[in-house]
Length: 117
Image (cartoon, rainbow, N blue to C red; front, side):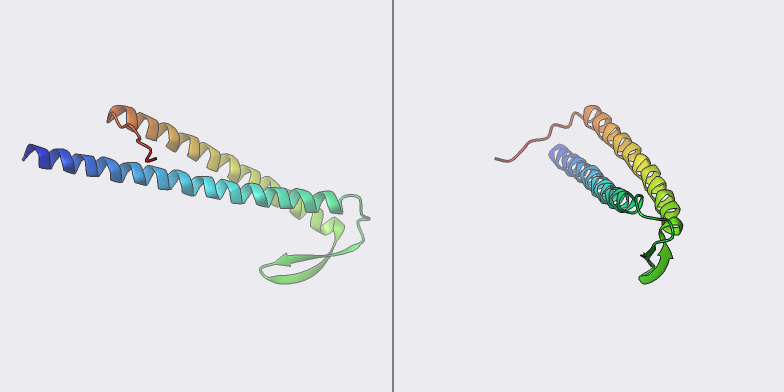
């Protein structure tokens, strides 16, 4: 009976550990995606900045290519980029918080991770 309880507790701990790991992996993946989008915005902004403001350019909005001018597109790009940076900061805070929570949980439950060779 006692061994059943111990096995059950071990299974619960493994499940919780897997939940923490999948949450952290998901957050890390989102962080990577946002960083890539920020980099793309930066590249487009650097490309458009030296161009004259009345020059024609195209922007993809909800799957539709729309004709605009450089001076119309640059402020929107900057706004989007700033928004993405805020989202990135928030995701990084969530990741750090979840990592700290997992570390406390591991310490509280005396969990040691064993790597299979």
